[in-house]
Image (cartoon, rainbow, N blue to C red; front, side, top):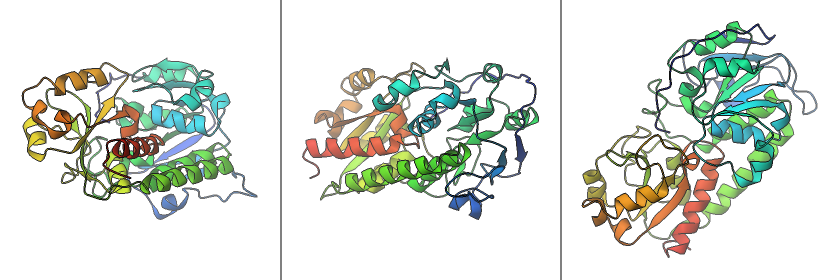
Length: 353
């Protein structure tokens, strides 16, 4: 998602007996692409110590199943909750939306440390034995050595592979050299399930998500349908490029993102450029936050239908809106939710069967 730069913070905590070893580069090794483990499980269980190779530039070694995890992004949090791990979580942070309804009861058991980016000190106060994140800037703040600082305190960190997969810079918002695929999200689920010694739960969740994506793909439109994905900002909108979560949704459904000629994940694009490409449908992020202009759905629609440029758009004149949560536009299990919502809306609009 388009980043907001968090404040720099520092802190210390007595060591916890887990270790993390830094590497130099961000990417995915061959072992990481398979399951990420270097120590094979026994009879479907995780064997410790478990090493996740090259987790966005870091080898993460886990000595035992975590009991005090902190997740600092909604996407990571919802994976952990979907795996039934709420009793092993001591904090969450950085929310764009309400929790998925099916996870609300489990989520209520976990303290929310912050609605937005949480400080390093606040995380350490919970004495975590694992910190997980969907985005590097939520984990690191402005400090590129934050993971190393956690490691010196004996706290391993796990970063979603989707954050760095194909990245040609370290921003988390910039270009990718190839399109993101759902397999990267499935790898995250599998690795987290291994870390927490619940591999069968991970396999079940991945199978469920794959089936849902297959079902959604079955309702692809017969004719070419074009779409634009608007995350936030009314002045210079963040519109999805080709290689992030919206790209997964578009390819699955056989529709065309009008900005699929840019490999930047969330470029800021003028409204005149949007009008020039005039998408059939606009996907609108309904964000439950107040960080950018146009975060909320009502504000987006009011802007589109009153601005002299945007009200000329075909999608606006025909009121062809797909309503997505902000989290649906980020690489996570919500990518599946977003795919289903687009498929249903296209069918309701008579653009798909």
